[in-house]
Amino acid sequence: MKEEEVNRCQIQEWYPKFKSVSIRTLIHELPESFVEYLLDDSGPFLLPVSVSNEDALPNRVHNPYEEEDFQVSEGSGDEAEPSSPLSFPELELKIKESIESLGGAVFPKLNWSAPKDSAWISTSGTLRCTSFSEIALLLRSSDSLIHDLCHAYDSCGDKTLSRPQSFFLALRKWYPSLRPEMEFRCFVRGQSLVGISQREVTTFYPALLEKKNDLEVLIQGFFDNNVRHNFESENYTFDVYATNDKRVKILDFNPWGAFTLPLLFNWEELEQNEEANGMEFRIVESQCGVRPGLKTAVPYDYLDTSQGSGWDQFFRNADEELQQQIRSPEAGG
Image (tube, rainbow, N blue to C red; front, top):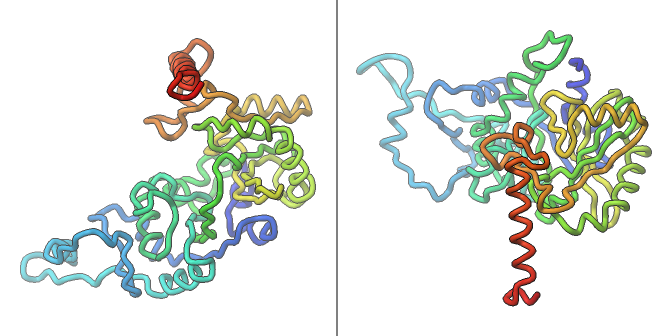
């Protein structure tokens, strides 16, 4: 992998070219002071003071006496003076304007990654944000964004950079009706589509069994007409959403390998598909095929789910129990 391949997958790089086939997004370059705030772990967890008087946690109980304990500048004893409250007024006002322009709710991401691991801390339990304070809370609480901030080029064979020159905040329009089962990751090798995987691998969606063939044709056609000749890398992945009216929207681009999860594939299988000039579409086809994913203590690709393994037996037992429940009199079976 090369630095230029990683750089092409930054949202501020690919979105202008694919804007017409993506979801509406507004992008802001972040001031270095805000980047430093995201990286700072030397003191207590404090959110910026909102110039719009918006609070990311509106139901919390404020204790000004406790908060004052943390607002101390360098010095000791009587010489210590309260430091100025942290604030980013110019950035906040720009973000507020963008949120209003996008319908009042957005989900944020940096150059490459969204703060999915910190969704639990929001009042909604999702990445839905309606204010700068909510965005700051998600970004500041996320460990996964450390990849963007510090490790984006670690897998590059020609690594010369430790971080991009600038960081960007992408605000993407929030669509409450999006269904996770209609998101797919597409794998491109040698500018050919070699694999498609259901993106949400922790759930079995029976409806996908009937739609699989139509979805394969739809996504392959979208790749041929909109992506193949417009994205410069030879090897990469891209995520899409298939709408009810048979349109496809690009959600993201990611490098081939490294930090990108192969989901229902492994990288060796995908490389073999290229050599065989074949394309395979994989979905979770039963309860037994569900992957533990990121909802367990360790990523699913560190777990043995092969036939006869402990996880395999667990899923078989779960599927048998489900079938028994369906056939029981109480269920009307």
